[in-house]
Length: 355
Image 1 (cartoon, rainbow, N blue to C red):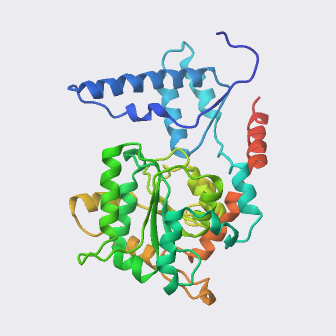
Image 2 (cartoon, one colour; image 1 turned 90 degrees about the horizontal axis):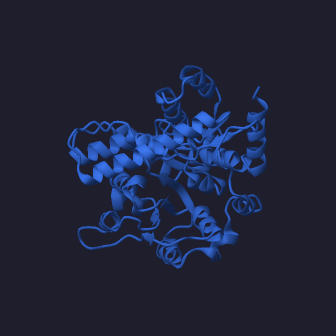
Image 3 (spheres, rainbow, N blue to C red; image 1 turned 90 degrees about the vertical axis):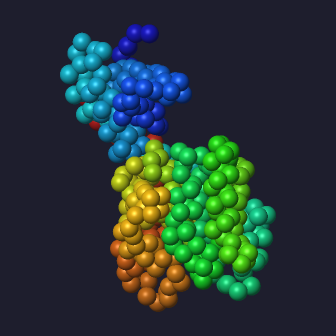
């Protein structure tokens, strides 16, 4: 294949080779050696794509830094320095838009989304029926909508719930935890589900309603779940984008997300404005080694955010965040504002900047 006069855009949706940096052990298992081989394959192909491209787009600030490193480390071209300088200059972040069918569902209904209730998965309906006689609020779910694999870190959702107070906290605030995601790594998924079920059960054997869904949900089912969600928890420490953050936001459910700029959708929704960024890595580390309790102020802020709030005091500050209602409003506005037409216009604007 030879370069031609056409403008070439490398639209990167994830930097697969980024996991290869940091491998330094001289003694590796066969599995680690195979992983290194895979990483090298992705690294070479991604560097080739960068060399050929006139413009590069990616989904997050973190991935932009990873692509810059790929370009800087690529010495296979005789004009390496000139090429690197040119390509680094033309790396842009372009967020994927909210899918058209989600946009239609979210934009044509009011914030309560009562019309979607009959699309709720049966497991979710049963859980609501157990809680609703004593609770009149619409949004009952604390939702985690990720694949059950170590990469997506759903165990951090369980850890966060435990730190918040576990079953006592859920019961006191009439919140139903829900995990929804395919079991892609069975042993890991079983541990997550077992810990999740244990967290929702008292030492006396009393169980608080919870929901586990390990199958694919269609757009209307997702709309029904998100429309009954108070907060969506996206536990990944890294995610190139995280479309479920945007989908939940479109239905008025903001997300708790890992801080540090490693989740792409945060820059669209706005950290501290349209989503709630916390140091999930610190929570994980302190839970695993039992050291200290430095995350206590962060946990207190989340607890306050999820407790019932008098709507006559919406402007009141809760910890470092304004009320959940305000965050949800901002999240919804940002999600619905970045539709397919807006994304296309953003891409055109990027191309128009080329010399």
